[in-house]
Image: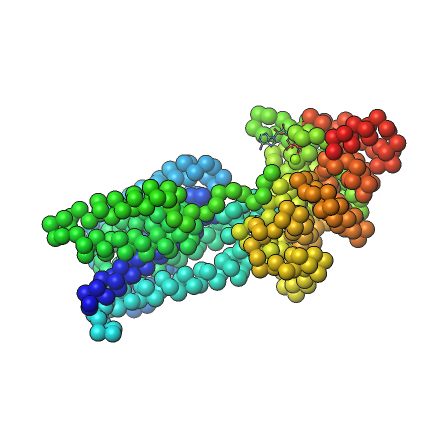
Length: 298
Length: 234
Ligand SMILES: Nc1ncnc2c1ncn2[C@@H]1O[C@H](COP(=O)(O)OP(=O)(O)O)[C@@H](O)[C@H]1O
Ligand SMILES: [Mg+2]
């Protein structure tokens, strides 16, 4: 029984992390139609900022964390300004290639100017301590991650439903030109989408770094892959879909770890992607794919 | 107020409007008539900054060509576009709030939203419902109300009666007439010539991207041959 609960907690916390990552991709995709594969490298920028802060500025973990979040958010906004703005209204393939390009450039900057080898960051170890809850051992990190994701979902929902800027972002996902015809500046809407995406990358960065304890140039690859898969499963462009896809991916991964016999352990990912493929056969556009029509065009 | 000279609208290599000129004076309702594909919507799009254009578009003495869409809205141009294009994934109220996206007077915005909900009780009853659940006529009223939320100096209406039942068409034209009597300047695109001419001061007939006839509605009304042709279109 304890074992089952333990694994459910695992599935939830994995899912929470994937949901956080997927939301970062989905928010940009929903307003711009861009799959930002550089999202993972924004996370890596957060990781390297932690290294820099811990080495140069302070050992205070809260300041290190704040620095990483701010750096990720600023990087994301900066990338929109210099790299994605010129291809804003281009076709999706151009945007996708640009994102790959940005990703490669960032990774090479890390390789050239920092180091190809992993660099340890120890300031976040304090976040991961075992605690007992209802008779089950869980890690404080898992708990923190789940709570953070829930808060992010609540905050994002309130923002998107209550504030004019949130409404503008939702409207933009349907008909961006019409939002501009309301006099609402496209530049602001895009910048805001990337700012939110960057903040989400910064949050995810904390948990990834706390678990791994080190950063290397390819830190972002695995997270962005998971985020992509979660978005595809949930339905690209749908924010609830991103959350659902994230939690589903977490559940399937942990389920595979539990159910697969030891000797098949190495094939976990193959089974995970097999199940994802089955879901996509059932719903080719993802489970909560948004409707494609634009308003009531005649 | 709005002065257009030698306007050409381009879609890549295709020229949809071949150098037309038209004027809208303050407080007037001017109608652009013409069959499908005449270039009416292209003209509206060019005024809004959505379609690529050459020539001169002057609004209140300010040259608009080359300015961004958003700046034209801020200069006082609002549009209820062809096909209405309401934000169907948002609530009725949110549509109106976005219409007021360039305004900062919170109380004024609230009051204006309430004004529309009393003018169109059906919108008020559905203020929290998704706008996509409204009927075509209700969506059209919402689209016009949304455009007016920006407090424009000129209102562009692209085929507001398209695809609506005759009774609803009557309501829409009543609404436009009411706006005009309140002093709103209107550029109306219509295929429903009879109704449009009834409420407008001046009209242009557009066909295949050129203006074929123009005049005050009184003079046009006396031209029986033209009227037969126009009402035949509607
Ligand atoms: N986005 C577009 N791309 C290419 N051609 C277009 C586009 N929109 C309209 N056109 C063409 O421009 C001409 C005028 O269209 P439009 O302005 O929509 O006419 P109307 O509104 O009078 O029915 C038509 O021949 C149409 O095919
Ligand atoms: Mg048209």
